[in-house]
Length: 419
Image (cartoon, rainbow, N blue to C red; front, side, top):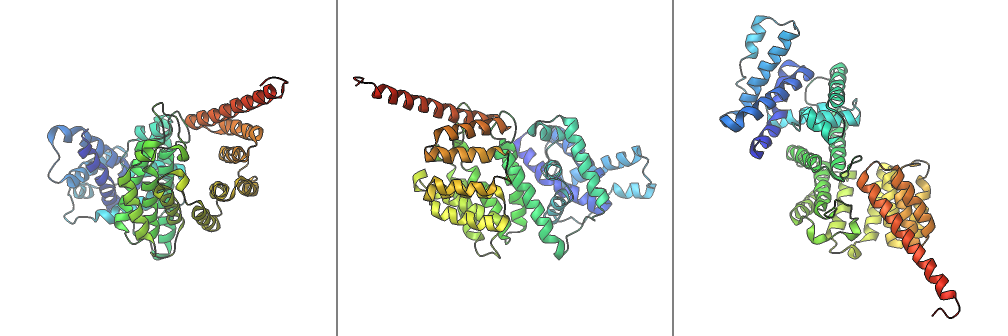
């Protein structure tokens, strides 16, 4: 399918879904109908051309699918309501309002993050169930069940399809941003499988976040999240070598970073400053900006990054933030300070591979090779990402060889007459 048609369908999908749900209230049936209309468009438009009013074409097709569904289910509708369904409404529904409302529906706080991600990618992102299943390395039937359960939870919640009230707004928007953040993270560093990155997921997260930012340009956290994604995603070309192996930030060729994304991200960070209270996504974006502004790894402003992580830790209480703060502390003031911070999260992150990975790195900085080896090995065993597993195992192997070399050198030089 031509990329222009695909982009148009993804843009129109939530608008059409919003129109259907606003008119008929059945999110589950409407979402299925829109997916079928999208598939029909993907088949016909490349050969027949995009219709003059693509939104109306999709809406009309989706309504026909909805009628077929209700007929097959022997829904209690009369002939008059069926006839009215076949008329495309003359008053256009706001694409901005409907897209945001569909996002609010998909990111309902009652849903688990996994369900919210799947439903968002399907209903708002326009991905098929098979595409989502492939991205998360599960079979299509499993993903279909996950999406069906999510829609059932929304239906049983009784939450109407409407603009959230003032009291609901902050909580629901926070859920939307959190789901988009999770989608991006899964795309940028896949939690499972043989590939480090799933570019289609990170790009979709950026696209959806752009949509929200266009609707809410004055919200500092929305702008901060988009900036964060762009500043991190800009490093993607330098994150792996030709064999797909992970290259850590300090060793990346920064000439490969996407300067256009960095410039846009930095401008967004600057524009977000002063927009209401500073939130966690703005702080993370500010940290990413400091990394991206440094021409070389040695130029990184670690004291400033450490200070920002301190604010973020105080704001969120997230132990993963403490891990990152420990690295910043080690870079700014030496490994001993970073290792001391790790002791404060042992219980909360017990068994998490990232705790072992960070501790191994700081122990290596401190010169404790044997302890670093043990933690690199533990981290490699615990991660479910094959590229990260290979990277951690390689670090352990390199340390082991260096340790053997040093021990061998010491034994030779201690022998009388060896030199």
